[in-house]
Image (cartoon, rainbow over all chains, first blue to last red; front, side, top):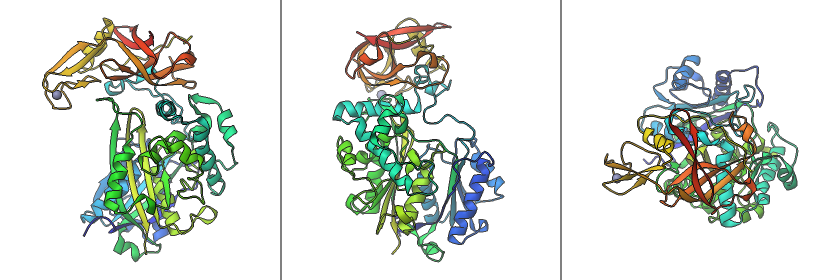
Length: 386
Length: 136
Ligand SMILES: [Zn+2]
């Protein structure tokens, strides 16, 4: 039996906190685990696969987490490929379950980045290790690495700051409909353009917010998921990729999402027309634009006009980031897990005012790392069970 | 005009020492594989196209063009906060290799994609230097 359509996401939980000076990252993970297991009607005793990643976790973080939860899983995976890690964890869990190496996989994330004042989006990168020695002398920041892509896209295709701003405005419009989103006051294109310049051409409102937060996913076989409390979200396809700039000077505007999504669509056996909504890692506005192009929803260079046409707004052909995304809902540093959680909730059709009507299929794409220097991409295609 | 950047000292190891010491002599050293001809940067002990260790080092012309850039207005890291706004850029060398660097010696508003630039060196302690670029 093929992997596609045999594994499902059975339970999810997004921790509602956005500011948690009274909690630890482990506690946020444990509270999220409790709620996601309750969501599908399982208990910690059923979990035999554990997956986690986090900026606050050490190199043996997932082992420490197993100890915290007093779990003795038979399958453990601490893969950390940046903010996209949890998207990749779903595919890794599916493979492990399909191979019989575990039955119920728990994927966890928790972070107190905001209340601990960790530098994420607009902070500097410091590091003395020889691998980063070719960027640290030059003041590469996270936002700067994405700004290099934005500048190149503008020069090559005539993309405008207004088109990028439209992304932030759309995410905020969705966040207004999400009761737990951090930023819920509507904004206009002029507000984005008038906000402080951080790294040209990206303004403050082109950048993700900072928050605390966390979440959990429960993955199991489709057969098992059908016996549980919620309507399962089937895994149709998945793909991963790593992209970098070092040798052969590849085009800066070609990103990992191209390879990972081609693989995911091939495995899923569906076309782009059959996708009802997308959850795309929006670390910065430009990330959404180049990801939409790489995913094949518009041609290279046409991302600006695609977005300007209103295509990514709720009620349009391809609504993106219905929760408000990292630009407006939450961003504790690695938001890939929230992409999956919202996609599953949309497929279950439990999202109230921000629900995509008749949602059958969702595409999730996470980007990890720095887009113009070294980054990863992970794609999932999910479907509402019949 | 750009303000002076105090470049943090890069980490140097066995594989990258020749590059940083070359910069100290004002030579921008690149690697070419003798077996398959691949140019590579950052430096490695072997060619990652064919895994040969027949690597030769040669000085680049030091000239290139701006491939992309960003004028950075926010960075609280020491060495950079005093230099805001500074220009972070990718420069594509004549040899076809792309380097992350800073553009200095001009007004940040005058930097454009395609601008012809030439290498210069900021000397650090211990006979190494950080290469950066100014308009030709
Ligand atoms: Zn070779």
